[in-house]
Image 1 (cartoon, helix red, strand yellow):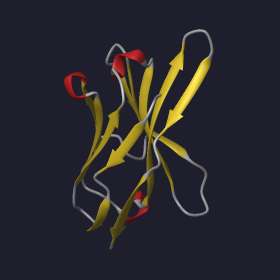
Image 2 (image 1 turned 60 degrees about the vertical axis):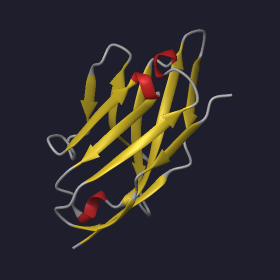
Image 3 (image 1 turned 180 degrees about the vertical axis):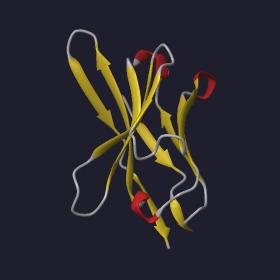
Image 4 (image 1 turned 180 degrees about the horizontal axis):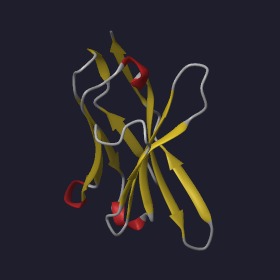
Length: 118
């Protein structure tokens, strides 16, 4: 019954900011890793940022210093704060949750569109 629902996408100009939210149907600590991926037209889906159960974060080099991943366990929600947005950040952003207990299992949201104009 795992469900991930993204929200917060939109259209804005370069230099602006957005905060994406991903609400999970259960405790976010039931997952080993939470993350955000994105896919632009003609490109493969790529990792943007991840946060482990222990709170360790990692970012793609292209977004390091501009994006911040965080979580709120009380709301079972993971966030992606995006600052200083660039046109190349335009993509569909997907929330991902991974379990690596008895077997590796990935869960995905349906995505939210982020469009950055120049």
